[in-house]
Image (cartoon, rainbow, N blue to C red):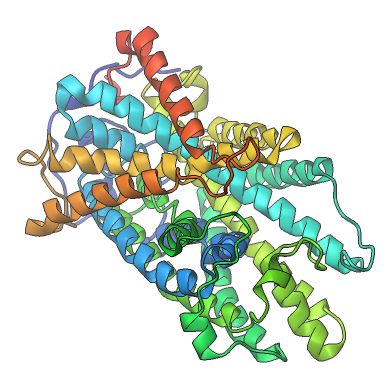
Length: 526
């Protein structure tokens, strides 16, 4: 039963910190921000990083989106686009890390927006940021676990002879069943104590690192035919079959592969109430997960692309993997050298486990966001979703996140176009949520912002504006048509999905929330 005073978190008095005791300092700082310690604070800096790194998971994003990179520009778009997007993403991460250090709470982005936009605009800013953040996170989980379900179906296809050999092709109902089973397992794992999740998180990070290094060396080494350095670093694929001929346009569309992969690093912020020295280790988790992902992701792209020799064939739905580019690359590498593709299938298993860990950590982050957002009364049935069990796990929020992600994937049964529109919120919706508190920090809170231990000093405003401009840019670029002529099947539904979420958020605010939602509220007992 909730016995706390329902007041604005701004009304909580300042409490002096005891720097010599990390745990007391964290709890005291949390009280300053308006909350009592309810979750178990046992995560180290490594554990916080591990959760976020396994969500970013370069193996997951680059494997599932490699076909997009090949289609739109090929090697040039991927090899040069990745570091460009990576550096700009790091700028967004730096701006977020500075704010995270000042406000280390599980609410993360929506709490930051409330505090940085002031009492007058705080509730509205918090409402918009929170809903874009949580819906974006649910879309990420739906997308990640659906991509795992699709990869499992491809592994089964190749294991039973491939498309050319009459292998088993899973129906859309089998794929959605796989998706549901994966989410069920993820919900069960996330119901365990945070100490167990910490172990899985660190295992996931190690698996991602080792997996990237293994595959980037093994696949080109096994391949009997390798691409030349000239092909890898200079070939620009304009044969996309989508009616787009402008090289600049093609290059821009190819960047989606990189930007889709580099998302989810707000997880470090959502885990701060379970992290020791949160105002230092939360920001470290954000920055390090992006930085290390950039380095290892580029190595992965280089290694795999050296095994590419025939782009049209890899993208053809008539190949053994049914058009799943990286699966075909792995399969052919071993089949051409050893006479069978078993080794390639095993390599796909390595990727599948990495994607599994990514989805697991994504549910962890989702549940902490849902816990915090409902703690502040923003969600329907809020009192139910912010309850924690005896192991100090927000158990109801865990199962809610898994259920909603499954419901999002059900749209794939009607149309893959509809599902793609739904998960497009995973990139654009999330980045809008990332940009809002940064925008408030460089405008409304430009003079009043009080940084934490990690800060950008005099460069904070510059970095913040660069981050906001980049998010605004990709929001436009990734809403452009991806095929011509434009039909109901080729239309890019990203702006439709994002505008739909915007309309729902605005409508709910005008009709109801403006009368009762006041932004973050304290739960500190009398």
